[in-house]
Amino acid sequence: MTMASHRRDRHPFLAHLPFGLVMALVVVAASRIWLYHWRQGAALIGGALLVAAVLRVVLSDEQAGLLAIRSRGVDMLSYAGLGAIILFVALTISGGPFG
Image (cartoon, rainbow, N blue to C red; front, side, top):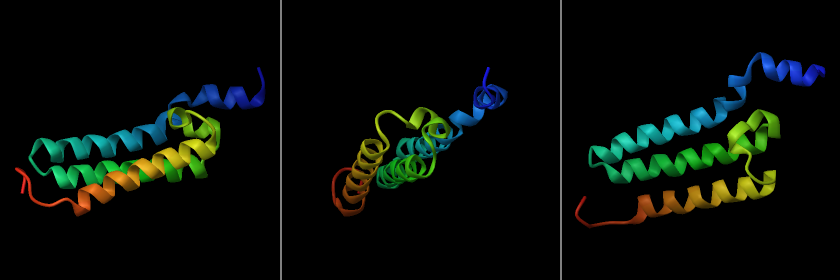
């Protein structure tokens, strides 16, 4: 067993902490959507994806845990692009049944 794998085995939950943070934001967003504040919920989901993009850039592949799906660049562009689109739609759409 190498030193790096030994450190990883000691605190395996730390590898899932970034994903947990993003999912916690999504849970808050889902609760806002459930309470009929869908624009706030959508904006929070967009923000959660932007947080995921920042975490993916800052953290190593091992530290990013479940946020690391493809290469760092592809993940960052995917998270940031989708987050920006969702945030744009949430902030610019008007009217509709939810006011």
